[in-house]
Amino acid sequence: MNGRVALATAERVLHQLRRDRRTVALVFVVPPLLLALFRYVFDGQPETFDRVGGPLVGIFPFVMMFVVTSVTMLRERTTGTLERLMTLPLSKLDLLAGYALAFALVAALQAAVTCAVAFGLLGLDVEGSVVVVAALAVCNALLGMALGLFASAFAQSEFQAVQFMPAFVLPQFLLCGLLVPRERMADALEWVSYALPLTWAYDGLRRAVEGGDAALVARDAAIVVGVTLVALALAAATLRRRTP
Amino acid sequence: MTAVRVRGLDVVRGSTHALRSVSLEVPSGRVTGLLGPSGSGKTTLLRAIVGVQVVRGGTVEVLGLPAGSPPLRSRVGYVTQAPSVYGDLAARENLAYFARILRVPGERVERALELVDLSRSSRRPVRELSGGEQARVSLAVALLGEPELLVLDEPTVGLDPVLRRDLWSAFHRLAAEGATLLVSSHVMDEAERCDSLVLMREGRVVAAGEPEALLARTRAENLNDAFLVLVEGA
Image (cartoon, rainbow over all chains, first blue to last red; front, side, top):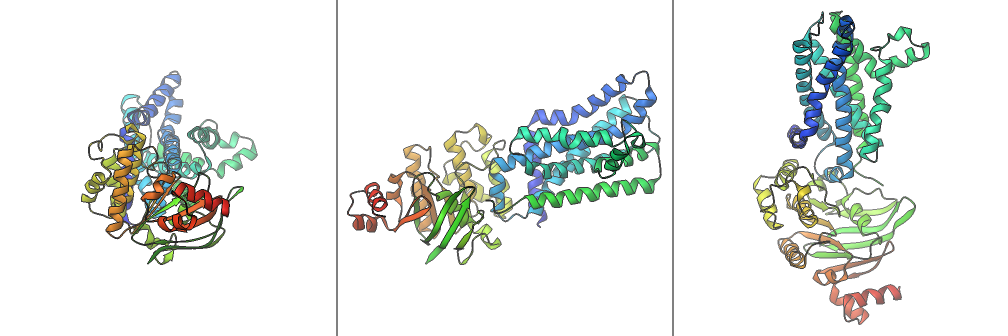
């Protein structure tokens, strides 16, 4: 592991992202826009928007980063740059740390923009701390990034990588408890939900939004970080220096 | 001196037996051409030498170490057939990134660009460049680290004759400075530009040696005919 190589990689990834103006726009404009949509869909039930809007601030980054990273890493695989990197004095950890650093920065900016719009313009009202919600949003973005890096190993084209979004993310979104409280689901689904990382991400967000027990928020965040590390380790295992 | 020593190399890729008991030696400080038709196993052999190919059997020794050992990563430069650089970044930006990975000073970026004659178009995104220019960006990346062994997979495909001649003289200049070059090609007329040759067909080495020796051995007038004699005699 070499910090400078990881930093160089992070800068390179950000540089590439900056060149892609449309993706940048999507990353920063879509989450606030969707929140605005929620706000006016629930125009007659502001309490529903307050209940759902807070956690959504932290869930959008998860979804966006999953897609952006899985496609970026897939490109790295299909254009041969990954193979080139694997012949160079760069450790897998440098590469993954570079990605994590770059996308953490993007996620932090995304969370800041989304929070500013949600709390400033849309009048979202939460009991808890906005900063904690934003911090959890960054954790969730990194979780999405790590899962995206791992998932990219199973896609052979960008088309497939994009299909992983509904396949990996939508079930977690349905089961996490945001739309329907988990205890009202079929028992089997409730149990499955505990095995899914987004469930814990959502619980942390919900507690943070409600101004709930800080220790439990920390526990939920720790689970998210733990799953992120496991996913990164799995992603590292899919990076092979030698291929058939 | 021998830069690369391959012994009994066997590689299976999918359902094809890509290399069958290949043995060869690549002399240091010279330009060795790896020639053969497409599908003869050239790329697989080069991948095994660089250490990115899963092999079934045999040994590959590069600069005295097993192929793919970590110390070799800064001593061996590899250029794949398809340019492996970031299309959304400029040539200069690509080189700057790889220079940081190789931990070489920034001046090398300029020198590598000059060597492949790309100084003028170095600020445009690589994907906007022509195929030949993209291939040269990829080559420039491999030159950054001033590697002792340079493995080039069909580096001159799609280039105009002037540029091809210039690149071949660049290869010989590098060899004169002490580097070893292993260059694959499926065009036999490039064989004449090499100091030594390895001829491949259907996953086997058909013949190896200096061009003059191969011509003398086969009593052929040119290397194309020599190849035919060797294949039909085998």
